[in-house]
Image (cartoon, rainbow, N blue to C red; front, side, top):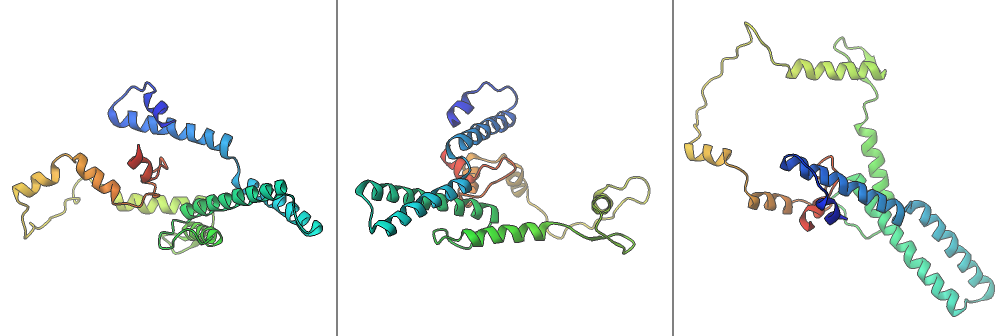
Length: 213
């Protein structure tokens, strides 16, 4: 899928071509996920129902036939695989890096995700007059006003800021090192130094994707 997306004809500058091909790859992967993988939570419930039915038969009969036992083992293996996928999914959403996978931490990762989303949500805000409001329109206005006031550049008289000269000067060779083009080696070192399952931006692709492809 990656090769097909990268061979698609795309016009534009280099960064646009990369961005566009990443988008094509993402769409192909999403279609494949819906078709081949589907809803892992629903599949887990279905597998649990089949396993419960076979185990109930085993209790009633005092055992299962060889064919039924093979079927039970197959469903148990698939169920464990689905639980593993759920754990990885919730771990990525929770952004927890200090705990290792493999101990069925799905519930913990899920709770961490819910808590993080709850903490990141602004429910009440205090405006410039000290009045609190939970109205979404007011919250948006206060936030926009805060950043506009802080980051809008002043023009005209009175906007000049007298800056003192730094005590330490940057040497010419240091300046050249700072402004030189980034090398492929530096990019590779930066990408390889990060966690493989971290997403670098809005495209959602983890670092392991760029290391492999």
